[in-house]
Length: 162
Image (tube, rainbow, N blue to C red):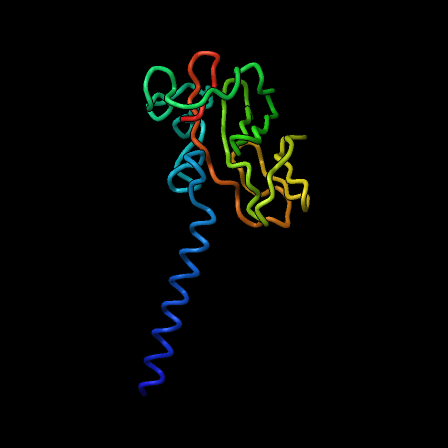
């Protein structure tokens, strides 16, 4: 009976270590991802259902200058497309006019950096995983998990990391 208890303890410790490793792989990489990774509302600081893309209180957090590194002008992000910011490891999209979203540029399949936005999808060049520009969900495998949401601030015609 002592062996069974010891085995359970070892298995439980191994499971906890594995869970921590998996979660740390999906965690923050310098503040570009949302605190819960995915699903905490709109990554662009817009309240869910805000189709006009008007900044919500979350978008204004960080002070009058957006509080973060400047990324682009709103005119740099095409409607129905997006732009990858390789150095910041973030991709910013504009699914509908005036609605800006941001996601981690790290593919959830094997950690490659996504490289482009084409035909309404964020494209990973390593194994051709595709992610929807509207919410980061998988549009084509082999990835099975969505891109993590990232926080941006849109103030006037400027987009910055939040």
